[in-house]
Image (cartoon, rainbow, N blue to C red; front, side):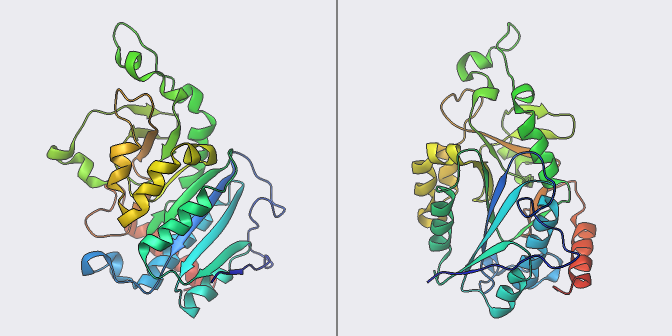
Length: 295
């Protein structure tokens, strides 16, 4: 069963693009997958001592604040949400809440992927789990990369750089973006050669491993629909590494970039993005939630 809930904007609240506010840059469609009844991964304590509902609130609010600079649409796919969670999401203007009774992470991911495959070719579709904290500049930086990708990703073969002979120019490859920066990539046994790009605002590193929180254009998602749908079975994000993302010599796969330093962090102990001090951002996000009566 699906129940869609939407609420008009309230006085004083920011209006997302498409609802009257000025906007620029690429269009984003966020598919935010949420469930507040599940235990934390491996039963570990969550960062900052938050409950699952509090973690969802901080994650979503940080995303919502960041995306206001871009044209966007937000859909929340809620699986067995509590009434408190439903009330929270319904308090945001022009956020579509789909109340589902799916019962498992795999079924929830499957519904998210199915919806992602229906989005327009030109739109940047963000498949997002409910435990990622976003920096205020997240979507501004991503939009900047997208707008300048032809220049930033142009990689030409020369006598000093023969890699593009095999891979072609990265500007011509389908692009996917993974907004966090996982700490294991800096451990000795997990280091591997990759390209580094710079766009004037941010450094971006080519990566070959992601979770199921990533973004790509609608036409790119459909191009790799089989690989993405197969990864849903068992929530096997390792399959994305094996079949979707390319390395230095890959020509027919996707180029996946991760920001350095990170623009988001996975709120799970042991995998939070390095270098950035996330506690002040979490404190600021919670303070803002309290100020608007949503905490």
